[in-house]
Structure formats: C-alpha cells, structure tokens
Length: 274
Image 1 (cartoon, rainbow, N blue to C red):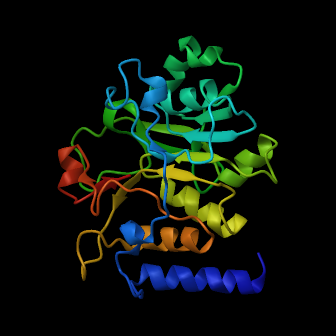
Image 2 (cartoon, rainbow, N blue to C red):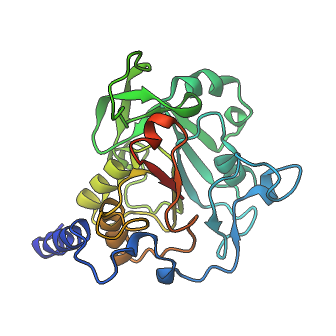
C-alpha cells in the first residue's frame, strides 16, 4: 500500500474504533444497504424439502442477481464448515464453481473423508483455519464440536479441550492456491471469532478484500457503552473500511444479533450476528 493509502486506512480505523462517526451504528445499519433483487440462503437449491425447510443448514444469505445455475468460472471460499457443507456444496453442484472449504476442527477432519462432498471434483477441502497470522495457534472447544479463538472470560474448574491447530491468512491462502490476482466471487466466513483477525490482516496487507461478495457471521463483539445495542466499535472499524472499498451491505439479521448460546458467554455479554 502507498503512504496515502495507509494514512486513509488509519483514519478509517481510528474514527470507527473511537466511535468518532456521524453514525455510531454504521456497522449494522441497513440504510447503507445496496439493492439486491434475488437474495437467497441457497435452500431452494440444496434442501430437498424446499426453501427454508432445512433450518441450521442454510444460514448465510447471498445475493444472486448476477448468478446463473451452471455458470461455472466462479471461485468460492467457504471458511468454517464443521459437518455442514451445504453452502459450498450448492455452489459446487448448482453453480459449477471452484469451491475451497476450510476448517481445522477435529470433528471436521474426522467427518470429511467419508462425506459426499469429498467426491465432488470441484470441491476442495483444506484442514486449516483462517486467522491474522500463519502457523499454529491455540483454539478452544466451542459449541457443537467446533473450535474457536475465543477464550473463557471467567476461569473454568474443568476447562474445555484446547487444541493447537494450523491457521493461515487470506493472502497466504490465495498465494498457495494459485489465486493471487484473482477476485473471490463469494467469500463466506463463519469462523467463531477469527473473522476479526482474518479481515484485519487482509485489509492491512491487501488494502481491500479481493472479493466481490462477502457473507459472514460476527461473533463476540462488544457494544459501545455510550450507545448500546447495535453500536460496535470493533465491527464498525472493519465495515467502514469494507464500505470504503466498495462493498455494500445487502442484508443483516437484525440490529443487535443474538446472545451466544452458552451461559458462560452470555454472562460476558457476547453476541453473534449475520
């Protein structure tokens, strides 16, 4: 990045992180949305029972205005699949995309070799996670057999399992897969808290995300004590930069999200939102 680009990036970070914005609810504010005529959670393509009839399997909405079934020539990155590959599976089967799925969770490594998606020639699984650094990091057992970078706020008498697992940055992944210079057509992030470090590193090192469309779930963000629900400095900082890079919001779950499922996280006031 040039000096002027870095200065502008710093300006956006500081204004967002300190809440020095005209709109302290910028990160979750629907008024900044773009218009999407064909929004889908992909269930109409992958759920045998019909649209919206497979709860838990099709959780991420995407905009399909420029997509045609069978089109091919599309690149999809799916970070965080656990044992639910439906998102990437639809993109591989229905849209004939080159799909790369990533998850270091032990439950995923055990499940994937005998899964149906392992048979798809254009679906590629990588047994490492997403982060803001390359190497091995400690990840902790989380909901539904997943692993998360998030640590317990309060000491546990019987701490859950801790795993040392491999992670990589977006820039490193794209270089190793031969995708440097390409744009990811659809980037899905559901990585239990690692979305912050992954996006922060990508925006710092790449300037803007090399992605045409992003669908993600935020985990464990705090609220600005001055404004309450819907105002998160951590989320505002990243969304502000993504917005400046040309990405516009087309959907979000609601203004404040929902409390994380486990009591220990609820007591700490940790939220999720898509």
